[in-house]
Image 1 (cartoon, rainbow, N blue to C red):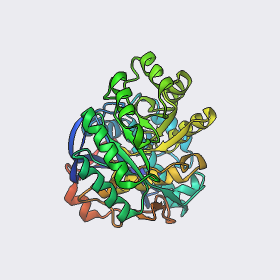
Image 2 (cartoon, rainbow, N blue to C red):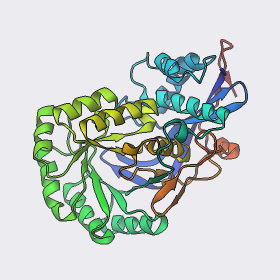
Image 3 (cartoon, rainbow, N blue to C red):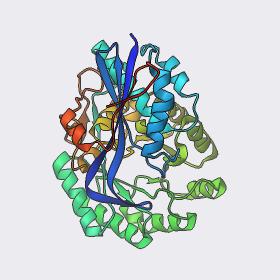
Image 4 (cartoon, one colour):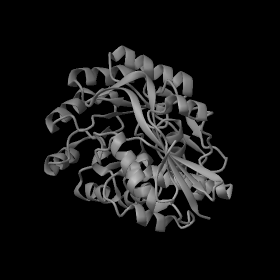
Amino acid sequence: MRVTRVELTPFALPRKEPIVSRYGAVTEHEHLLVAVTIDGEFTGYGEASPQPWNPGGETMTSVLCAVRDIFAVQVVDTDPGRLDELLHRVRLTAANPAARSAVELAVLDAYGRALGEPCYRLLGGFAQRVPCAALLSWGEPAAVAAEAVQARERFGVNAFKLKVGVDLARDAAITNHVRSAVGDTALLYADANRAYSPAQARSFIERTRDAELAWVEEPCDAGGRPSRTRFVANCPIPVLGDETCADPESAFGALLAGASTMISIKPARTAARGSSRIRDVAEAFGAEVLVGSSGEGAAGTFATAAVAASGAWTVRHPAELLMFDDMAEDIVVDPPQVSDGELTVPDGPGFGFCIDPDRLAALRTGESIVVDGTGRDRVR
């Protein structure tokens, strides 16, 4: 087998409602669809979800340039069955995690389609149903609580992630309102995106003590690691590292230093191989992991779910697999299937989804670029 072409298409997914965090309000998500074709016949897809505030500081422009000018050239005419050799090629460039991950996931998807095998089985195949957590918006406490109840009624979920770090008093009020609405049996956790100072983070934990949060994600910055480690050492609940643990090396360092006690794994950032390495690092420390979201649409959700389903350590806690439902439109034919709080990973080849060309054409934000080893890029 040989990779014969790589096609890049920028597109944007509008949200049903804006999502608010410390970085502001997001009304749409700019993505890049990477399509990798094997032997001119089998095409797989990877969805890049650049977020400038995340590790790598990627934008749509930087992702497009990195894939077009660096990664696609490295991938064309390689054997997709020798995935580690291919990944060695694309790892020669520092940073660019979303761009690199989209390429790897597209190759893996195409390879699974060529073999007629689902990717979750190629990656380990531990489970086919993955428990889900609903990501709630930030706003009026009663409205956020109603959103949680609606997610439970629609999907059967009993795990909820809160966005905090915007206003301490309202953050605490939201947390307590949601706990009252979903009851004592629900799993509830909060993500501050490092917005709090250590003192504010301690205040948030104290104000929400009765809400019994399962853990808190990135409560304060880890750049000044001593203050973060002191906070973690005295925090009554686990501390989940996300953007401060964006690769195996930083995850290892955070766990070793005591700057985090749990790790968020995001396949949109570390694809399949990097995600499995982070999982193994965490398991060696006895640290729990959570499979998180980088704002993927349906295509990225299918890939994330396959990685989550691949091993026992990644299905121990609900994964953030419902962001696709926040989008007003998408590019796939059929969305992921979620019932009784779990997403069913498709048994079809690759990641098991189909792209709708008409929807992609309607949502694209620029011309598609084809890299096929001819020595020049083609725009179509």
